[in-house]
Image (cartoon, rainbow, N blue to C red; front, side, top):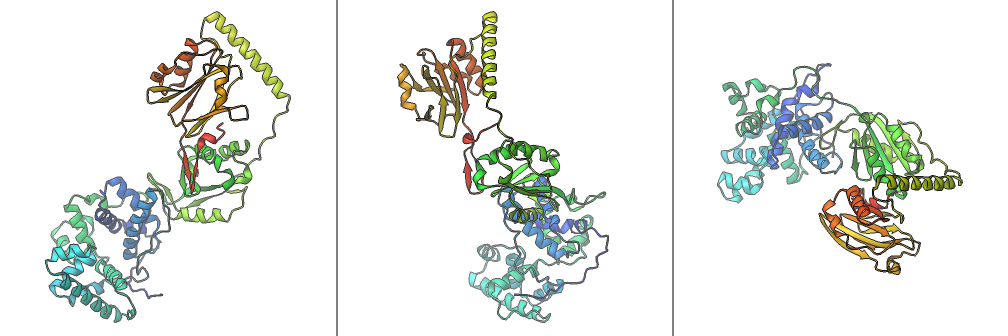
Length: 507
């Protein structure tokens, strides 16, 4: 329902900085709400939530609007900190800006019990049971006082043309809470808050009353109420933000995209948000992926824009995220607005390269054998082995005439998962396509191939976390072996999908 806006007039100089003008009121409201939620208002938290709130303010915002936005920003920042980027919370009755005279008019019609309930239930926002406990009367009296306050409020706002005949009790309570927290624009400022005049002013000003109580309780420093003396109040009001989406058919490559962008990316649902200003070679990084087809160019879409936002310590701040998130939903696959076109996958090399590769490999093997003969180091593997991991299994290739051992390492404890006493034993692990597989969720899995049956290799557990040391130890103890050490990969959550990076063809 459309409601009229009532507020005392506020003259705004065309060059006035709303961030500086609302710095103190916004800070008080943020700290008050954090304490009410049981969250310790540490200075870094206050700063980040304040930046988030001020970024949402318009140039001509009234102080009451600024305080409402501050309360909404606290809720929104807590959600964003936990990875939930929902719509910015809407304040009940936000389209009504109460005149400060309404508060005085309501209080003027109050008896002592009504005034206490007005302050505790509506100004401080305490739950009903806590209000009953503090006023020390039967709950029926408190309910009667609330009903009386609703009727008084209807009369007061009705005199200014706000019709409330069809309003529910919840709507009236929301309006009463806004009236109870309405303060004027003539507060003494941080330097006068703790003076005698400031204390007298706070008796009739909910904003300054809260500030004094927070300062006395040690939750708020008076210095936090001062905006920076020089320069802009906000550290920054704009940033380059890139919103990327990977096609559902290519989600197996999503972790590659995340890793390619280092720490400058945050996963928001099924989207990747990138701090574009912090990645000057963004085009080259994405091109390196699409050239390999991991993913292909037509499996990515995105939008890069300068928006009203900041890259906070715990979350992306400000409204700019919503702009790029909405824009990417309408973008075409294969295009990234604000970046150069992404290259298509490179063609495969000519088939003759395989022969050159084989020749090169043979030359390398001969060189390694010669080096061993001269240096007496551990001999190179004559039974090569390769493998891949997922979170729950390991798959590997091994020559038909090789004995195979598989060792699992958890912490520094190694146990044998498989030991072939005969060449045919490993047939029980065959997958049917020339490879072998078995299930395990160990921290590390060591696969060893050898020309003959091997003794126990569980002593390598003491080298957990050091693949090179494990491999060198086994080759030194058993000549002619092939060794591969596979660490357990970690899954990544992209929207509703959980991706197993062990299945990704890492570069």
